[in-house]
Length: 116
Length: 109
Image 1 (tube, each protein chain N blue to C red):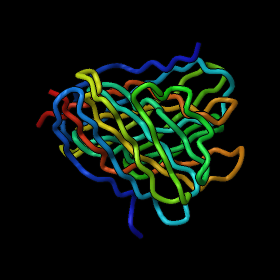
Image 2: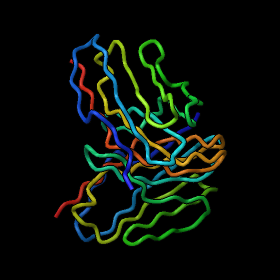
Image 3: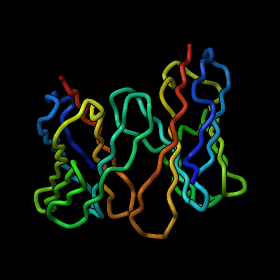
Image 4: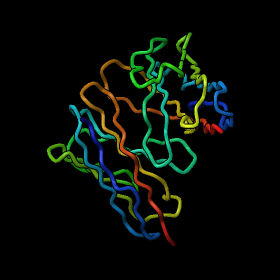
């Protein structure tokens, strides 16, 4: 069974430029998460989807970040315009999506973003 | 507020045993996860505890005390490949996962 797929793996851009990350979750997983991880820190949740609905986007900086999961499968996270402080690893994770239950999250390899 | 504490870095010797501690203060508790993350890679699931006691899985064991807000991950017969960061994460009353900053474990020959 394929794991969570993310692309690109690495991205270098200049500040003020836009950037987009793509994620394809494990087949059959209804819940999808986007995290940001800085070096030496734990993952920080940006947004969580249940199928195509964003059910928790309270930590997403909506002035520059946007996300979509139009058909409830793969998802795109966008930053426009990027700032120097956005340099980090962007992780995508998925889980089965059973309501009000504890679920193991499975992570993709991440996209390492460097903003110059 | 919600808080998870774990040591920033630990060093151990190949073949030895190491215990990585995690203490937490969260709004409710629905279980605690340990994940392993090698440098430049994704976190991978190691263990889940929701009841008090020790869960053993090969060379790795995880312990939980809910009354003390405390868990530890025990790694036996350390191998060089165990060099990684170990992340503690707690599921709160809203089933949100709260992450610690991780413990970087360095294994020396």
